Length: 87
Image 1: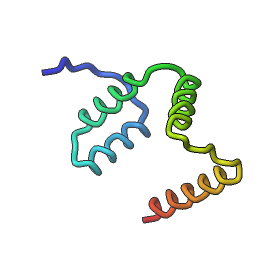
Image 2: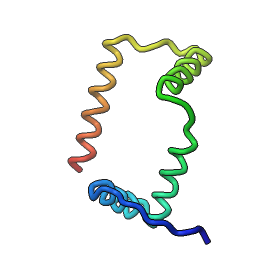
Image 3: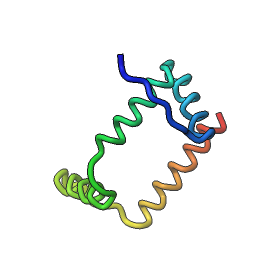
Image 4: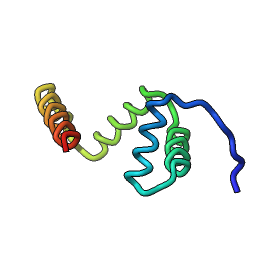
């Protein structure tokens, strides 16, 4: 069994954790363990991450989005997210 520890978490994050666990049918501990594990597995800075993403795009031969295409896609995603939240 894993060693148990305690720490302080803001009320809004704790509530989000509880909702996510309930939505997924998992325990809060399982969701929290996975989130922390994923966070710790990420290496490097944001700049390094963006460079890896750019390199992957180039390796696959994917053309970068124009500013207009990127804005259109961002707005579409924002609207879809709002529709999902509205239920």
